[in-house]
Length: 96
Image 1 (cartoon, helix red, strand yellow):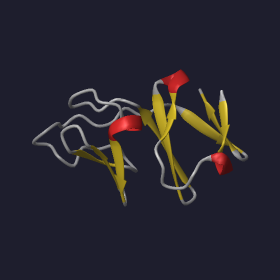
Image 2 (tube, one colour):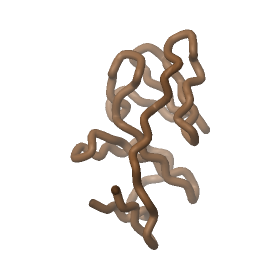
Image 3 (cartoon, rainbow, N blue to C red):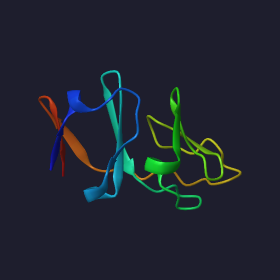
Image 4 (cartoon, rainbow, N blue to C red):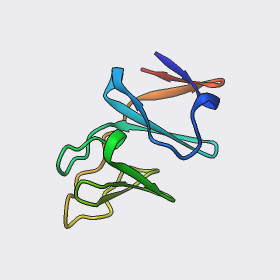
């Protein structure tokens, strides 16, 4: 499966239902994670909110670093977001 990068809106949480994942394009970077908050298993596609370099799950306000997936609210969960494996080929994201 592949997605054309320029078709992704800037700074938006785009669901990828086939992979149970979401993708965010921010400038020249792309971030892909499993669409499930490790705290309470809410979906970022419906309950996620982007705040600069962070993504917030609005179910219980868990905050994560968009670039690394690390939890920024360890009092709620220390678990990071789970990365989805992909590579960039030209103007496409290809999922492996």
